[in-house]
Length: 135
Image (tube, rainbow, N blue to C red):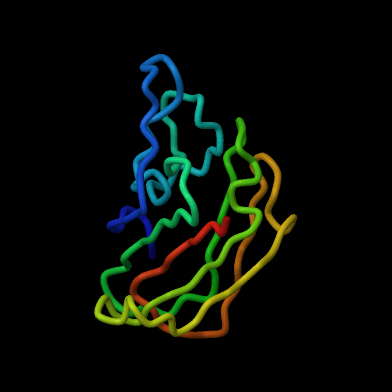
């Protein structure tokens, strides 16, 4: 459903060293590459700048029924990025100011390099899905 769909984020991390990892484009999270190692040339990781409460979102284009979201931490470093996060959705783009549903999980549920977790929902339909890293 989310493969190659439009994405948004609070910011995008840009590494100033061209020999280091990156770029961390928002679209990397939905490109179909599940390799969590950002040091590889085919990098498929997304990252924000160092900020309070960073977020990432995908627009599915229409309100679609989603039962879960697969999240994976980076495997080469930064394995606690998603350790305290929220997942929530908006039925339409117009409803962005009103959180109609969210799923919460706390510390240690997805902490550690390359750890993955499927966050399951009650059956619902949403268009815009947000991942918010709290802290």
